Amino acid sequence: MKQEHAMESGNLGKIYRNGEVIIMQGENGDCMYVIQVGEVEVLQRLGSDEVRLAVLAPGDFFGEMALFEREVRSATVRAIGEARVLTVDKRTFMSRVHEDPSLAYRLVKIMSQRLRRLNAAYTRVSAHPFNQSAATPSAQTP
Amino acid sequence: MSNLAPTSSPSTLQLGHLESHSRVRVAVIGGGPAGSFFSYFFLELAERVGLDAQLDVFEPKNYARGGPAGCNMCGGVVSESLVQMLATEGINLPATVVAQAIDSYVLHMDVGVTRIKTPLQEMRIAAVYRGAGPRGAPENTWSSFDHFLLDRAVAKGARVVPERVQSVTWNESRPQLKTREGTSGTYDFLVVATGVNGAALKMFEGLGLNYQPPGTSKTYIAEFFLGRETMEKYLGHAMHVFLLNLPRLEFAALIPKGDYLTFCLLGENIDEALVQSFLNSAEVRQCLPPGWQRPEKFCHCSPRITTSGAVHPFGDRVVFIGDCGMARLYKDGIGSAYRTAKAAARTAVMEGIARGHFHRHFRPLCEAIRRDNLVGKLIFAFTRQIQHHRFARQAMLRMITREQQGCGAPRMSMVLWDTFSGSASYGDVFLRTLHPFFWCRLLWECLRSLRARPLN
Ligand SMILES: Cc1cc2nc3c(=O)[nH]c(=O)nc-3n(C[C@H](O)[C@H](O)[C@H](O)COP(=O)(O)OP(=O)(O)OC[C@H]3O[C@@H](n4cnc5c(N)ncnc54)[C@H](O)[C@@H]3O)c2cc1C
Image (cartoon, rainbow over all chains, first blue to last red; front, side, top):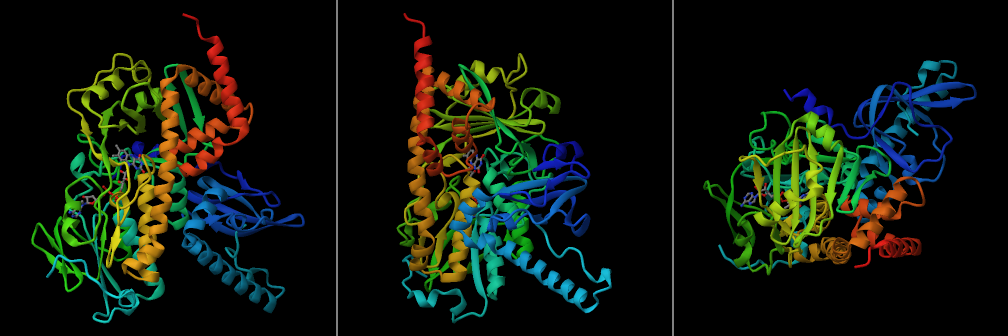
């Protein structure tokens, strides 16, 4: 068993309290985030409603679209309980990906899996337009 | 068996096209960061392209042992950029491995002290133990960083051979290894990741590779137990760096790691006299509890650090990575191990393992690091001038203090942040200093210091 107090000082990233917004839909972004501890929810505003698109866990990333395009954030991400999240700067990422394009492979792979799930959810919703539960969460992150 | 370097045509050295075996056999000598990163990325890429590979990592050290025996002696600071890149790769450092997350640097000079915060005020620098912690530390407090990386490689399918390689020869143009314990084997491809601390590199002298090991210099590391409360009170979550006017001292830092404080001194052959001068300096004393004395017994070592890259760090079926190949000057050695290891893995899997393949696809990275180190030497020469001139130290201190109070763009702060943390290349740091405002401000502050100087 590792000594508990020894680990308190070893958490990387920044702490977000329960309900704290990490990124906001519509805002500009220039970084991606990787969850170290805890969970976050990905929400999208639809008129006055908020739809939960996904719940992400340690090791998952979000906000990656900002690394590849200059659009505003496509969703809001909020901490569920206390979460620790590490920021990956676009500047650092870009300078490394220039040297080693394979760095983007894992991001592309996970984005492709998310797209696949999104397509599946879309197909289900199209086939059963009145069945709300046909749409699967965890299809997309901002 | 022969001692001559093999000559094979590049096309027969593409791993996917090796005729004699269906399974490619790879040997990695050294399971430090370079060896583990290589193994991890090689096996990942091999899986991606459907290459069947058996990879053996020869590593005699048991990282679960405390003290120097289980440790690859270093300051243990995982740079901000490497923490980010590893997270992007899906390798997140757990809190059991990170002895201390760091969010700022405190710069100590005789003219004053100033704190430089991380650009995002976030814990993005990891201070780790390479082994299981200092000699005498309670067992199981931290997991070794090197063990954590080696475990990732094992999870990808690497096999660890806990033995020391004693000789390398050629067996019909393939590298053949023999360990001290008597194990021997012939491999299709050999990766050398032995670092520079030890006699391993002598094995390659007579192999006809024209390999010349990197230049090195002796350093000093010591670990002192201060206890958590004292650490919090005197050092906090910051790394403390010192610009002192001590001859031969290039860089000195105090790195907090939980209950322990790591002293790390780099420069020209650090000896006991220099260590004493450093420990007795008022700037260091003010970071420590009043009356603190160096205990009689403590964990310390004098490892070698690379000061220049190796010559010809590759040949047919052989590549040298990490410290024994090419590393950044004084900074982010673990980051260099990651970069060279990954470049070697990419080259081997995607291109081939002939000298020509490494020349085209691995050498450019080595050359980029070599060129950047030349700029690094210039930056360290500039820093040395600041170290030697009190008015320059005062000017720099005023510039940083002003910037950290939110007045003006943080140009000097970022230059120092990137230099100390190793987050950016020396080239980028140099480009930052070319901004006219940087020089105007620095000259202005220098003039102010000179004017305020008492006349003799
Ligand atoms: C004082 C000091 C402070 C430093 N501080 C930092 C820092 O804070 N941050 C940072 O990023 N870098 C730092 N470095 C640099 C860093 O230590 C190295 O760049 C890094 O360890 C290189 O990794 P490597 O895998 O190439 O070599 P190593 O870490 O040296 O690993 C080599 C491995 O090879 C094994 N080996 C050797 N010979 C054989 C053999 N014959 N058979 C089998 N195995 C063998 C060894 O047991 C060892 O495990 C510092 C270096 C020094 C000297």
